[in-house]
Length: 156
Image (cartoon, rainbow, N blue to C red; front, side):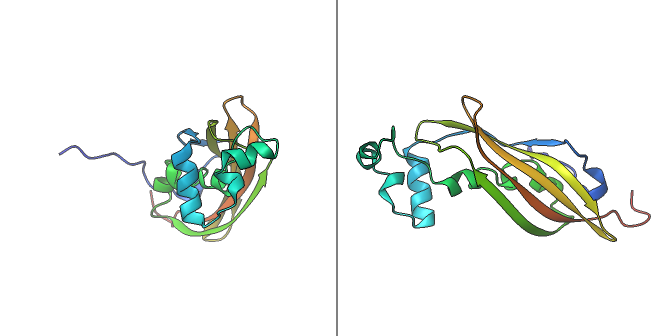
C-alpha cells in the first residue's frame, strides 16, 4: 500500500528566518461563500446576495474578511506536519484586511518565518501570513506565533 510521506518533525532550532510555507491557491466561488456563511453564521447579504452588493456599488458579493484568514491556516501547508510532535501551543494571531476580495477572485496564501525567539526549553516561531489576489495585490497580512519545543540535550 502506498503511503503519503509527511515532512519530518522539526524542533525550534530547525526553522530559519525567511523560510516559506506555501498554501494551495483558492478561487472564491459560490461554494466557498456558502460554506463560510454556514460555518460562521454570518448571514449579512453583502456576502451572498449579488443584487444587494451591486446596489451598494460593489461588483459582486464580497468574501468575509475572516474567510481570508482561514485560508492562511497552517494546516493547509507542510508546516503543521513539521510541528506535529513539537508544538506546545498556538499563542496568538494578528491580521489586517487591506483589500476586499470578491467572488471569482483567486487567492494565493503564504506563510513565512519572520522571527525566531529562543527561550529556555521552547521558542516562539513567528510566521508572517499574506494573501494576495490574482493581480498580486496584497489583500491580507498578519502574524501567527507558535510555541515550539527546543531540541532536548543529546537529541539528534
